[in-house]
Length: 139
Image 1 (cartoon, rainbow, N blue to C red):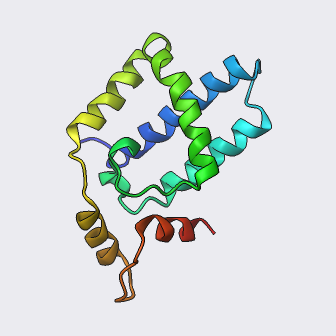
Image 2: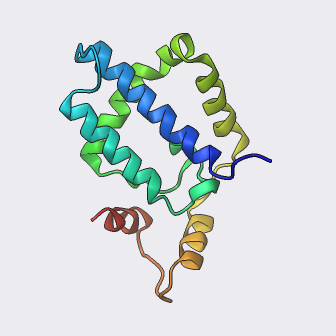
C-alpha cells in the first residue's frame, strides 16, 4: 500500500531540489542555501502545507489558485525557469515523476476549486477570491 502523502512529499522534495540547484549555480553557494533561497524554500513549504487540495493537489501550473504572494511567485518562477530544464540532467527520476503528476491530474477549474474550498470551510460564506483566501491562511 502506498503512502497517502507521497504526492505532497514529492512536491516538497521537487521544489527544494529546484531551489537548491538554482542557489548553487546562481548564488554560488557550496553547502546549504543562501538566506534569500532559504526563505523562499521555507515559504514554499508553508504554501504546500496550507494547500486546500492536499493530496489532490495539482501541479502549480494546473492549479486554479495562485496562493503565492506576487513577489514570491516571481522568485519561484525564476527558480523554475532556470532549474526546470536542468532537472532532467541532474534529477531525471524526479523530473519524470513531476511530469507524470502534471499530466495525470486533470486541470481543475475555478468552480470545482471553489466547491472544494466551501466543503472544507466551517463557515457558510464562500470566499470571493480563492487566491486571497489562500494568502489569508499565510498570515
